[in-house]
Image (cartoon, rainbow, N blue to C red; front, side):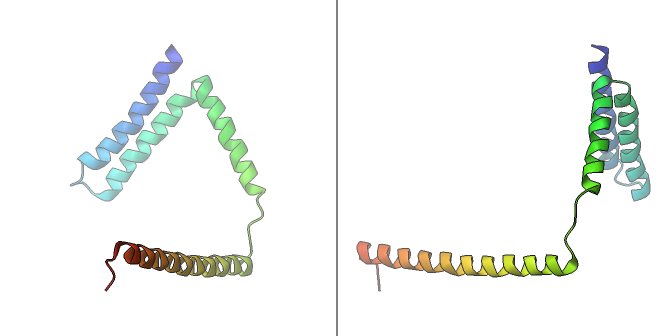
Length: 115
């Protein structure tokens, strides 16, 4: 029960930081961002003292380790993939336009609404 209360308090810290960000709209942006960061840090500290929080921290660490193992594409590969996606999108748009035009023509001729 105590762990659930700690997690709820951690959630309230985050909500308080976000509420402060929006309620103090007339204050400098730096102060508002520090409020949000303070709420997140306080929530992290509070969550650390629960088994669920420690499991989440372990999971996060493992996720970072896995992300470091990813082999990212080179600039050339990224540009080639982007080009292929762009060409595919254009071709699909033309195909859908053609099908839509064909169906609209058929419907107009069947309903005698054509010019």
